[in-house]
Length: 112
Length: 114
Image (cartoon, rainbow over all chains, first blue to last red; front, side, top):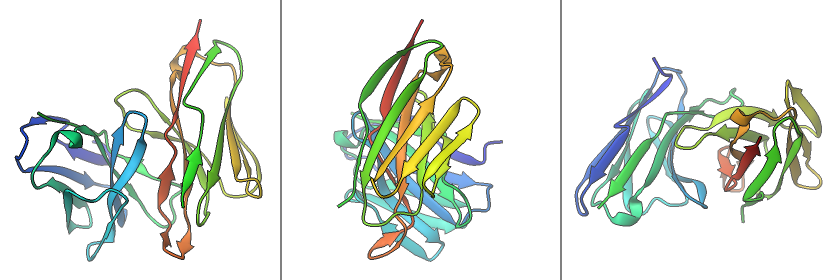
């Protein structure tokens, strides 16, 4: 099993729909992150959480919300999806002693 | 502000050596990372530098100069499977609004030709 699991892997949804992307990890890491990736723009941080009670906005949080249900689970919601939220979304984890991030396999989201 | 620059695309020949440069200006610094990402896949960790100098790992080496805000990734004996995007990322440290998270450059797409 993967250390960081994202579901779904692919999703097509309609404009205005609410959608949730889920991330779970078995690394035991306390820090979790949501990034989106667009061609030519690289990975941009949406939200991050350093523990269950700590949630922080990243550089592009508008239109998104998150929930840290447990140390191992971090969900990203789009309350009312719009086409420019079409992107590849990555969840990542780290801890204070790690050299970097462990990434999930990504969720390709298309909003039509 | 936070700024990480790397070339958008590079082309190299199988068996050759290629150097991918990265320059950065960030409010804090607590390490520089290189990741490899094949199309549609997750980034995978290649290297980490926190002190000045060269770190070597098999066919891959990474160099850091903190005073110049500069790093490079060196790939030797290029193989076709090295065709991928290479992402430079800076960990921004603590304090002054920084929270020890990674800030990514836009990536360099490397095409290895026969």
